[in-house]
Length: 357
Image (cartoon, rainbow, N blue to C red; front, side, top):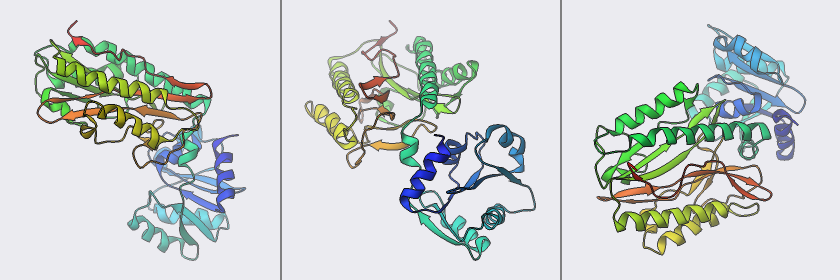
């Protein structure tokens, strides 16, 4: 069953006769299109993929399960969407309430005229969360390339090297391998490693620094996402204590991603383990997120996430401790949920590495 048929089944269950998808990651998942602009109108028996003239040739090559329609200036997108809805004989169309701005909704209302538009529940997120065999294969390749990049850049972790130097080498590595970065890599050191999403700077690495690298390759439109924290030169007892507790939380939470578990319970496990050393108060973000076409794909692992764990999902697991004035540790791997248990897709060494070795 292809993704179009899967979504049609979900629409029937939800009582949605016609659906307008405009959120590009959802459109890409549904159709295989890799461009940056596209929409889909879908009904139980009919549908159309729509994009602008920049992608006429590309859409013809990539979209096979739906007819392709394109428009060019001076036609407005809203008018083109409405024309296709009229051509399909639609009188009522649901749209993605999570992703449509109020301005776009107003524009569509004017263009659709006598067609009723209403906000539909998110029917795609749970479908996207469970990956196909082909999607899993692409994520595996992205994870393998991310591991290889880490192996390549650890040689730069030594006193005197700038955070910028490490960042640029990560990006160059992915480009040299014919891939792209899944997100802007994070390279932070010393006290700056207490910034979970800090940007690389011209700070030089120094003996006694924690250094956190968070990076991911994008391969065939799918992402990897790995974080490792190192120590430069010499690790103190405090470095080792914090790292060991974060590592234990990460390992036990990876093992807890079993079919039938719940994401908020896995997140709570991480916090209980960190709290044994009074470190949970330094862990402010959620434990992880879904991984796929987006690095932050469908699903979250967090204290308020009532998230069923199902076979075929791919999750990041990334507990962290961030102590202002001292530094931070985050360890992250990508985990596939299988019937026989969790499979870790990223394989770079998780033990504390004091560099240079």
